Image (cartoon, rainbow, N blue to C red; front, side):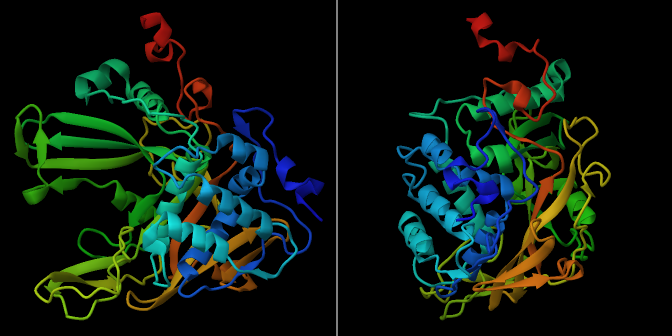
Amino acid sequence: KSWVHGLAPEALQRPASDNCHAPEAALHRVGLGGRVGLENLGNSCYMNALLQCLAGTADLVSYFLDQEAVEKDLNAENFLGSGGVVAREFATLLRILWSGEREVISPIRFKDVLSRAAEQFQGSEQHDSQEFAAYLLDCLHEDLNRVRGKRPMVNFPDLTAKVIQEKGEERAAAECWNLYLQRDKSIIVDIFQGQLRSQITCSRCGFLSTKFDSFMYLSLPVVDDKGKPLSCLGECLTEFSKDERLCGNDQWYCPVCKLHVDAVKRLSLWKVPPVLLVHLKRFKFDAAVSRPTTPWYGQALYDGLWCSTTSPQPIDMQAPVSRKLSHKVDFDLEGLDLRALGALPAASAQKVPPIFDLFALVDHFGSCGFGHYTGTVWHDSVGSWHRFNDAFVTPLPAEEVASEKAYLLFFRRRDALVRAQTMSTPDAWPHQISREWSFLHPQDAA
């Protein structure tokens, strides 16, 4: 058998230390390794397309083909996961896909395990590929969470303007990351998770509240607040970070005014992960109308929501009219520079230049009511793109990769090691660390 680099899967790409996963531009196999079709099990294209993109995520594959590493991290006692069964079956699926022995396989065992772990995926209903991505990555994270036993309760600091001025934003962000790692640390955190800065300003008294939260994917608008189509990814990133007014039912509670008040919210990227997953929000709800006696189809395809299309709803309930935003959003296949696009605040230092290359994407064909998903993945071993249309795998010219069908985009940061995120190794964090920070020395405060 032609294992990657001549090694059996259990020996593949074992990290040189516990704190660093060796980077690979792509995994190399002879034969059909990584270019294997998946049979459609009945409206399972949403799953197949996403699985092919994850199978093209080199750092993730390198980890899951290392059986010893997976078993070491497996957290079967974590009730928030699947008891480890989804992670184990995902690893088995990747080993088969990368074995280079078959042209097409059936993912029925994985689908069965998935359905038992998450009842919303039972049966043969169509689902949103982004919703499936969010569930699967979160499930893998919980199955492989390196935090054992009962998770500690953590209290995130009250980041007022005074606190930010005294500590500095970078220290405040690092302190929140440290608190996050007390409850959540896994290969999924290492590869896919970054950090957002959220700022809310009271329109009544000017009080500013700041939070730093982790994220696993970015959901970007493809139209502006007036409904005008955005033509490129840079515009989508700018719109994502625009001020949002919180008023009416969305008013914010100001701790100074002690009232629900109008406020202004702004989100900003603070730290970017090695693999950046971008979700283009192509499915939009318009005005509410009376819900018909038969179920309306397409409600699931927005913001990761899912609802059954098999159970009729009462006629007097209100349902929004959903539509797909089908215009093309341009993006570069190589050299996406988030700093040059203005997507990162000047105050947020990046240890590695935030320059990304596309390596996979999920396309959606059709409308809200009827559609089909495919995956497209770059294979460095053969120097070409391939489209995965369920069981059919075909080469795709580079000029046809970016289209109006693009829905989920997978970017990998250049020249970046995937480092295990732990409290004990702050130098591996994405932040610019100062060893003088007191929270890094809790024993001195005891």
